[in-house]
Amino acid sequence: MPTLGAIADDFTGATDLATMLVARGFRTVVAVGPEAVASPGPDATDPWQGTDAVVVALKSRTAPVAEAVDASLRALRALRAIGCRRFYFKYCSTFDSTPRGNIGPVTDALLAETGERRTVVVPSFPATGRTVHGGRLFVHGEPLDESPMRHHPLTPMLDSRVDRLLRPQTRHPVARLGLDTVREGAAALRAALDDTALADALTVVDTVDDADLRTIAAATSDFGLVTGAAGLALGLDGPHPDEARAAPASRPGDPGVVLAGSASAATRAQVAHALRRLPHRRLDLARLRADFDAELAGLTAFVRDRWAESPGLPPLIYAVAAPEDVETDSPPGTEPASSLVERALAACATTLVESGARRLLVAGGETSGAVVTALRARTLAIGAPIAPGVTWARTEVRPAGADHTIDLALKSGNFGGTDIFTQAWERLA
Image (cartoon, helix red, strand yellow):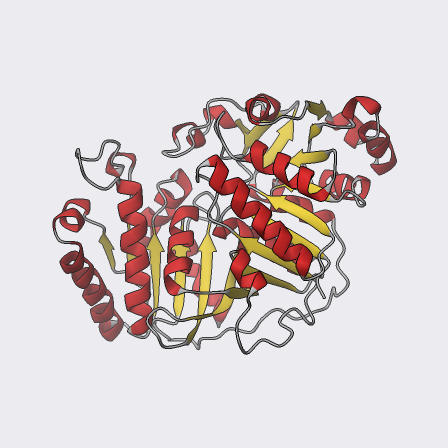
């Protein structure tokens, strides 16, 4: 029976956290939405038997605040109903949030629902280059507001001070604890957190390496709610450290495809690398707007033809390869580019799975959410890791009435090495 319940504000974040939990000895399942927890399916008599942690994947990062709060509360209530007693709100390690963003309101709502007064805010994930020092969030040593995240199309990050980002969003006081306190050890950090001045606060804690994460986890081991990126899970100790990961569903040579919807700098570099090595097609937004079905048919036919020509070599369908590819102003009266990309790649995924795809690598948080929803996946069993924050997962999908078991990797736009689109497949061998 699971005792740890986590709520992730996007699908890549959910698998990111689940990967860390599995590595720390938690038998972990990702549930796609609160409904997958509350109603796991007609054949599931005790679906959570043998599970230590359940991560609920939401698509709430850029949703309207009220929707994000409602989905998060439904997730928490569903997790409570299956036995979870400690909770973890997982958001992006680059704190993808604006002054009107969702991290503060969701945290407030979860605190109220659990009866907790305080929590920590830990967006650091040193393994992926995300650290907090002096309250400022850095990406590979570069302040957040000077990194490529400054130009994010949905959540442009114009400040690197986490406390300043959070204050306009929350009803709670926002405090900071520096690295000097963390480095004094778990007892000293806990004493600082127990100070009456922080009794009702959201406390941003400096973290620059994995040892700092372990200290924070130890100091907050009895907190009913913690919040942060997946890195904070590094300090948790699960009951089954030797438990095997899920085995792959596919076999070497099974048809696969890469669907890249992210416009992040990291994904653009990965696309550029793959363009020299994989068969590829870029989404043509004008053609999609003119005749969505015809353009979709052309894209999926291209992939199937490449499977026939080069079995085992996954074609790439991508949205952006260079900054100038980003459509900043959609034609008046037309579907915004971000929505069109998500819809097109989700439709590609469903059609290609019906055509035989058994390995899908999806890049981009919003794109991943659209793909998983379209495939009608309910749970994901965590398999082989690919890179920090990225893993293969085995899942059963039902896109058009027939059940298929596939391997699915959901990659945050900012994660992974340059060669991830070509090398990830080796982990399934």
